[in-house]
Length: 183
Image (cartoon, rainbow, N blue to C red; front, top):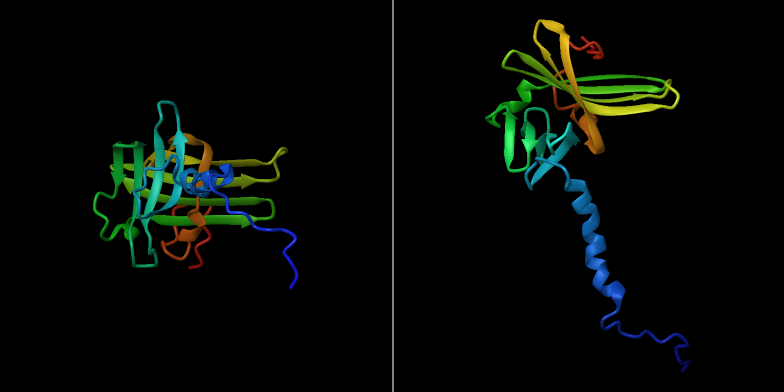
């Protein structure tokens, strides 16, 4: 019988053994950082905007399909949400619209809703024709009927943007300049 040339030793208090749980938690902490979503919800969009620690998040139920689950837009700070739309989760998918435009070097996605006479649009935009290429996410708010009166809040990094996952879930936004609704 041949003796093992590389005996395995038990790591009693090896530094790596102590750091392993921390390394395993880092992706989860980074993933949830800067979100107004609750545990048990999907983060479909989230980022910091402006100054003062305010955030924009689009949160959804874990199971999200056409006519199943919920979406809720949230704006504010953790523990102090200033706007949650819609207030009720039931029937919330009917309140949102999806728009997407794609061509070589350009990709734009938006999820919009109307509330209190204003139209809100979460957006993710990539323009590779610009040099250097421009990647931008944020939210625009426009008074309904007056598209010239629009304000934008551009996201600070890091950004979570999974808006494209909503294409099969939400109705197409026929009012959007970027939508290609296959009527």
